[in-house]
Image (cartoon, rainbow, N blue to C red):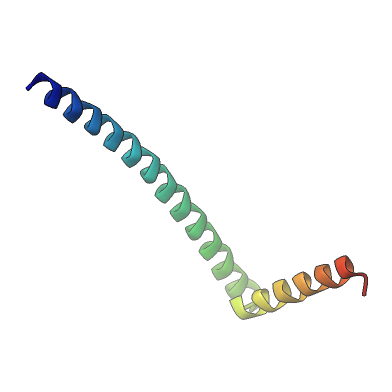
Length: 72
């Protein structure tokens, strides 16, 4: 009977640790997502730059990097 209590307490401790880690992960992810969304909205309002324009430049940049790396 006492052994079951120890197992239950250990399980609750592990569950709490997992919950805290997941909560920190979700909080950081949401913070980053909201920051990126705010930047994209400001760029769109201020300069008329769309997310598609930014994505296009990112793709061009990665292609340039791969061309430099392959020596073309």
